Image (cartoon, rainbow, N blue to C red; front, side, top):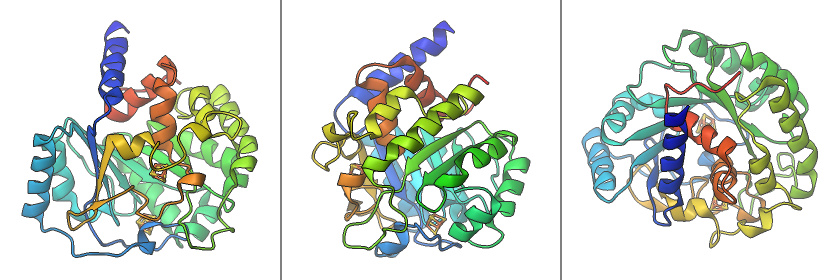
Length: 304
Ligand code: SF4
Ligand code: SF4
């Protein structure tokens, strides 16, 4: 327990440093799905770096002080060798995947599988057959993955059923973001306005109460995403801690402002990374630090 606490404190001090300490890289400009809420399909898709240049980018980022990397796509599992190379360079690597291409061994890296509801709801958002395929991958995974849900108007109603169903699978835990819109697009069918988040947040906290730490949403995180909490303290690009702590890159190695792209609507941000970061530190919160520990250490298992 003592070493857990020490590690959580070290991690928190590390993420508290106000210069970028982690990189978020779109390692591919390809994806085998076309999800309804996908911000990535709304962006340009420059030519991706080849394997050698992508690995060189990783090495340069490490030299510049980036200790951790989050790999996105498109679909990162289309470039498994690149994912594995990242795990040999960075101290911690998270890889977001749609789960349809399997979840093979990833060294010290941690798979995060995006699923957005029970079978029927998920497949309306992500495509026919995606739920079954991802669940099959989860069952076969050598290391338990984390499941991440983007909560939107399309799936909020099935939250409880989905969480219950996922926690019966061999997963490490679950994370939750609220859908973040793109400026200039009409996405009213997806957006849960800030004023209406409270009901969903209460349900998430009740699920954590019922099922324990594997529901990765703490009270400290809840404060960060609510209009009558701390949301107004950070919901602009200038004040967003993720924009300061994370350097984001497109698949061609050029910088972008945010993982959600240059046109993400910060005024309605639902990013779990901000909620986790601020929840852990403003003010310091051990429960949320443990959650970060779970994310960054594949061997760390949350309490049930
Ligand atoms: S799997 Fe990810 S990148 Fe591919 S379409 Fe879905 S949300 Fe977009
Ligand atoms: S969309 Fe969210 S995570 Fe991205 S820069 Fe804006 S506030 Fe930060």
